[in-house]
Amino acid sequence: MGTNDQPGNQGQGSQSFSLAEAVIASIALRDLYGIRRLYPDALPVGDAREIHRLLVEHLSTGLSDSRFDAIRENLYSEPCFDEPLTEGKLSLIFGVLVAHCPNVQIVGESEKAIAESIDQGVKWCHDRCSLRLQGLLQQMFEIKIYDCRIPSSKDEPTFSDTRRSLQLLRSYWELSRSVILHQMDALVGFQPHPLLRLLVNLRSRIESYFDRLSNLEGVEQARESVGLLMDITMSGQPDDLSADPESTREQVQIVDNFLETTRLRSGSKTFPITSEEEVFLKQAEKSIEKYHKRVRTAGSRMIENASMRVDQHSGEDVDVAYCHVITREGKRAASKAQYERLVDARDEYDMFIDGMTQKASCRHDKQKPRAEKLTPKELGILSDFIQAGKPIRPYNTKTGKGCASISSACRLFVGARKKVDVKLGRYRYRSFRLHKNCGDSKLNAHEFTPPDGFLYCLILPA
Image 1: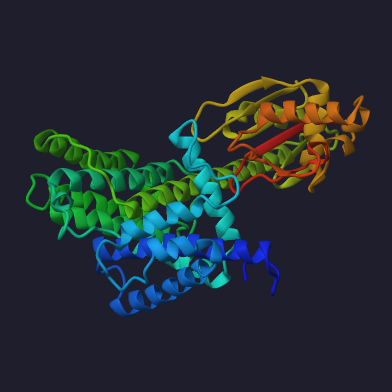
Image 2 (image 1 turned 45 degrees about the horizontal axis):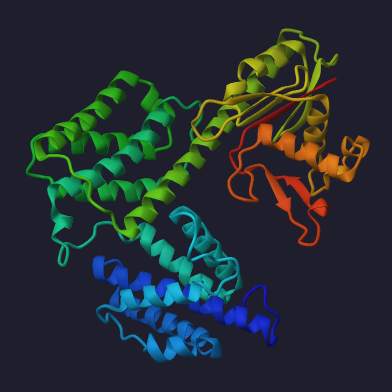
């Protein structure tokens, strides 16, 4: 049973389970047909047949609900393995099914609003479908990411077009390039490399497209440069790239020049990419950004620890605390000199709250940090939440208890959060998690839950 359904539950719970099974199975089955059509060598035929059998079983189970009689009679017939045109039928079935999910809009003000609504519907179904189906969906995701590398040009001639090969080569190189250049300037490295699996996959894709472009001028030199740079990067030793930065940049430039020169000669055209390529690129971008934050966090921690050791050796008195510093590592006292160094490095943090000046900054992705000025109460309630370590209602905080009413405490927190956090969705913020009370919004609780790799610093007067 789905995680939100009780065993043996009839009525609303079993209907939710049937809908969830049908929606998720239709998505996974459609993806399987797409993989078999565009990436026939991505998985053995025997494995593909078994996955197909299981997914058809889940879809049939979901559609057995009496609400879907019309779909079974007019749209659905149990698909055979590798049956042509099945993808279109499954897309149609998915569209009809997902409209039954709570709060899903199939008509809206914009395509973006409709797409976000459907995404929420799919998430709702994923949370309620069986664990076995969730496992199959995860398996399909892994196949898309790691085994669907170069699409077959058998039924789609544009896949062999030089300009498309160049477009994908460029996309994969830009991802690799960002890791190489970031690692060249990194203060720390990890062994084994946290991105090793991704880098191996990227290199395989790049090599395949170099093979397709093997008749072009300059391709072998570019291939050698990529091989050299990727070998060093996957070793996890930043010193090997930073020891001779000019040589590293020269190798990067060779690849860049090849891509730009080839594009000028071949002509510029943008081709649509497959859903498998899109999934890989998005997942790779997320993984690389997460890795960059991890490296930045480790580097900042190393500098901070080194600074403290210097202060200790120089006799600087940190027993007489100038302020208190709260980071992911905990709370500690800091001297005035240490405080000043933290302020100088504030742009390195995703969230920096200086209680000495009541100034704050918030950084999102690679954008320039946004500066804000906090009121004393805003600083107080943010400090209460960051130090709480658990869900808490605004009016139950030390600062909130001093507000005139429950509503004013809630407004105080919402205004303060807006200055230091990033809104990701209607009810989602990057660092403060909402624990929603469906009966009364005044009873909503919030929790400071910074994501992995998130750098924050709260400074409070001693």
